[in-house]
Length: 311
Ligand SMILES: [Zn+2]
Image (cartoon, rainbow, N blue to C red; front, side):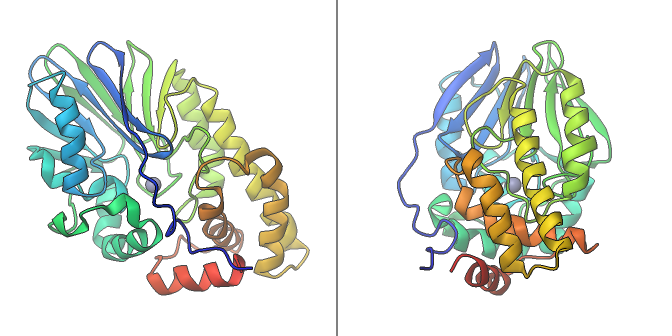
């Protein structure tokens, strides 16, 4: 029996919760939907990810206005995914900041990703017509960037490729708080369709772990402890090992998929978006085993992979 495409039938609204993790450090988590956050200085606010549409971004900004009236001068994008970036216009930020890989991928595949993501998860794109077009950062960095928000310094780091070619995180060394973007998830399946899996599951997560975070605001799921890093790694490696093994034995993509499902389901089957991610994750892992770079997901490729694997 075929499963409904991706999250096209996930229509139940989630409740977002504002949580002050330390004075002026805010997470807005959403029961497994994409999280956002903010850091408040004496002079300015840094907003972390934008949500999918300006209307949804405005709802979050209204909540934020309950605790600060400082201007949001900086908007930081943890990576290029439409669901994270297309609400950007609501912030009216002077500086829209991202890693160079994110800037490049928005130019290269932002349009296709916009279409793919809205079809995969329409609920997250409420009021999609309020999106004025793609979001392009006006500041891009290669390794690290330090921002002074007034009485508070914030570090932005690219610690390697992982979930995409351009992931970067927000690190607050004093509070030991990490906003990881989708490099780390908490009780949600990591999406690997655009991933560099070998690098993500080794060097990139090693570097995040080496920061020694006390609190992590993951891409999805509730604010977590450092434990979210090994848990995310365990999911990645379980899938990666299963796919490599089945591929070596000469299995078809469907065989590889069933092997991966059997390996993952007992431990991770109840994580958010488990079924949604699985076909795209397996397809990408098979491509990486064969030495291919991440493909550009179009509506047609999405549908073909889903039909082949989830039916
Ligand atoms: Zn993402």
